[in-house]
Length: 402
Image (cartoon, rainbow, N blue to C red; front, side, top):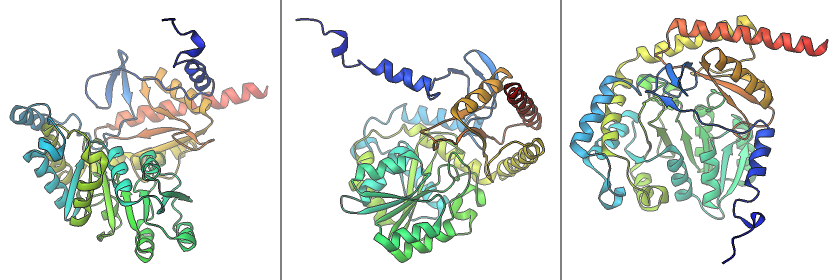
């Protein structure tokens, strides 16, 4: 048998595509972290001060959560063995679902292995060919992909524009409306008080992905609904993740009895996947209890956010309007975002450069995020580095003009 010539190899052309990504400043590289999630990290063997984790409450390395995980492993082992619908649904999973339902004030909650899988499962279970799904233009990719997987007709309304949504509903109606609660790259909030009555009048489901609101906003960290003082009805679906503010892994969907039973029967990303380890469920119950009782963590975040925004405004930095631990610093071009990120890294500070297609063209940025375990001196160091960055950027512009 002849060996295929190079042009006929299955991976022919991939190098060219990778080179094109690099030329467009969109090539992504992984770093190797040594040690747990915490502000002081070691990446690729170098000490770094991290401002890019979603561990908002500082629970990913909490001793109580670690002990719960260890006890869970001693009781349940390290794997679930199968899908929830075979024999992978343990008492630990069930207890966490009950705790999440009580925490969110919903009749039922259902665990998924990831938030991505949860959004795929919900949308494809509730909408199908011939249905219309309306989504915020800046929604997370998992919501958009869920609509595509469902084969529904996806339409996107202007970002956080309730009036724009209503106009589209008047034109065509919808089976389901989906939005982030807190937008993961901008840090702003969906106008839920306006969206809920619009969805109700249209007879449509409203799915809210509250991955970045859960644990951070509302009483005891109950999220964006509670932040607005809303009591969601059976037409509202809540998706929350466990790997951000709660510091563990996985996701859940909370809603009515009928909704959860329907997802158990029809959500393919639930039915056809192995359940997460029961020990992780035990750790999550511990982190959920800490998040609910320790309001100081959310208070600390608000202090850090206020101090950062005041300092950034004093420096004239182009920060976006965000009341959450996600504080974007607008760069515009991919090259500028990468240059800023590299300059900070040289100063020992890790902040990710966010570029298209994660964000729209022309809106590349630094995504600065805070944890309740950041110290005042950590914030001061970040602001000092950003100040130097601003001066060096201005100097570069001046040199170019000369």
